[in-house]
Length: 402
Image (tube, rainbow, N blue to C red; front, side, top):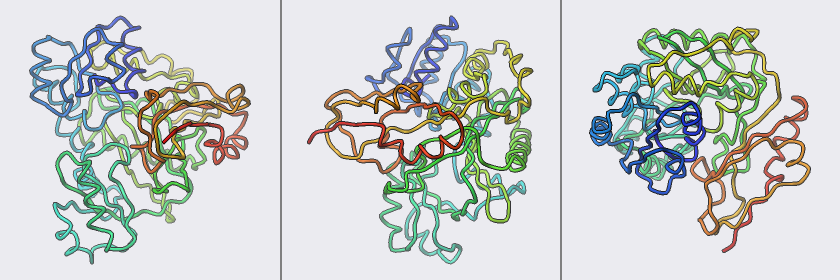
């Protein structure tokens, strides 16, 4: 299991459940290492290195939690060792953007025009395929790192350079920009032996003042998207799981609805949502899928009896109004401390986490790479939630110095 800030919740859960936890990534200072029984400094994109370590330690399962780039490594190691997993080929399709777009197109799903390229010159020669604006993305990055919206072809060389900085395979994809109606659907889903047994969807929201105004800074529940669209999304997800012969897996899902009412799946990653989404779902539905992830990796039985308490396990009605938020700085400099508006802290703040230490560098918010923590807040009703979301950053005081 990786050991970054996003992984700590899963590590804690596994330790509390009595599992012997070994973390593995290339960052010695990652906070999750301190929670584990053992840790090793091996990159999670080094398939052979992780496989060698797994063989040496005689492990019983591999947990990939909240990490796109680690998902194929986890599936590869599990296939090599005969451990529980979804097929490596399928996990790679869900991880690599160009493979996923090709899969969607070939199987009749709604899919934006998209093509993978190796160089800016190659893409420029193909520009008649597209109508601006378009999205330029690394084929294999996490979050919105290296992702940009292009409005002029003169921007292409710089945007390709940015995409390449975050691409492991050093390739990028250009895809049609789908203008969404309403918010962007975001949430997690869970399949057991390829059958969708649970999903919960909220909406993403954005910082319109950020350099990348398409970069989500959080999600909120309940969703404001018409249920007919999330029902259609669930049907598409089941068809994907069946076609890819998926096993017992958690997925992070993002989708949009266009002005013709078509649902486009932007992402269906074979891992949980990273921005406290499993905790959000637990708060608002009472379903904690994290133990399921751990038990699935170990090949242990999964207790889904809690689903019987829901009005519908496929996007159940939320019990609370909550939002998560990617903590961000309004200035660049050395981090000093974080504090909150007293009224917000008393009445709304449920939980927050950050890995920053005094003296660490922070950058004014551009995209997910500049986020330095996450929080979860509660609200009395949807009206209060929607009125406070645009002001949420004003409730957080991030002190920096030059």
